Length: 270
Ligand SMILES: [Fe+2]
Picture (cartoon, helix red, strand yellow):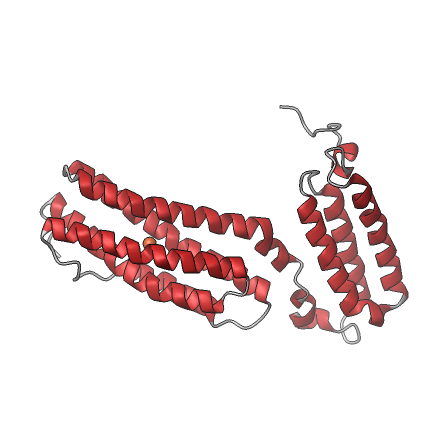
């Protein structure tokens, strides 16, 4: 490749973006099929439609420049999609797989964000304001998708993956108490304690989070309660205590965390 002008570099960057978007169109279809959460499927579906629009905007730019969109392969996108394929084909817990799909999609988004940023800078430098505006629309959609995926991961899917019962089922060293030094009952107590501490420390405004923790705890007991008898009872009573506390606080700002905080109600003052 010979690069003698900024315009040539600009066109090369645009072709790379065009190649990336075409690959991403196919990747999003597979990611949607592999996703388990409806909200994640919807996010991939929406971004698929946006990506079609982004390809259309890029084609408008190539028309304006009198250049072909072909001739450049985004190898970065090829690699990132190959990474994503590992998650798409993975077997295991649905919440964990969805967390992995979000991470894979965000790596692709971040690469696009970098490339659009560069292309916009070149377009402006070359006085191609109309193309810069079209590219900015694509960039805004990439930012919005990235933000939506972050919110989904942090507000629900990563947490659900954390408390996934698959951890206890699939980690062979933890799956049996008979031939290892690790006791399943100890694990359950540990999990119960973790849940209880999580409920205590959850922000007072995070009543939704606490409800989710409580729900995951019930799943644990449904699964292991029958096998563990008294251990289960002890752990369950611990959780019931905190569940009752949660019921009393009812999302009130003066919930357990505020009352127990060394900073007093309302948390630290800055
Ligand atoms: Fe895109």
